[in-house]
Length: 85
Image 1 (cartoon, rainbow, N blue to C red):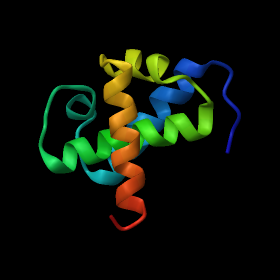
Image 2 (cartoon, one colour):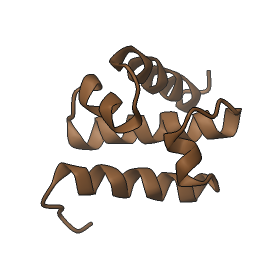
Image 3 (cartoon, rainbow, N blue to C red):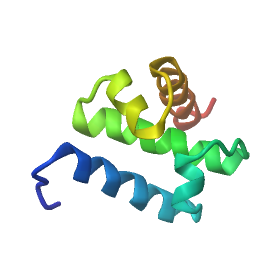
Image 4 (cartoon, rainbow, N blue to C red):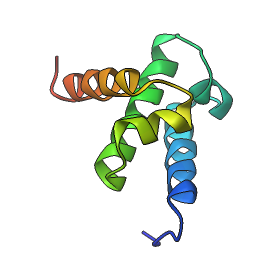
């Protein structure tokens, strides 16, 4: 994987890639849509950003226009899904 020079570029690429993998439009992942497959893609992106960048929950929340507690809940929900639960 190519190293990025700015966190903004890295985060945007991750979000766009994950949205594409899930077949969800980027504007929906970044928006307020609460459909299960859209929110799952959003939680997936939040978790990958957290794991790969080391950004704080509030920093990740700013990218998505959400509060840090929403990011915490999304990452936890995604991790539960990964573990079969």
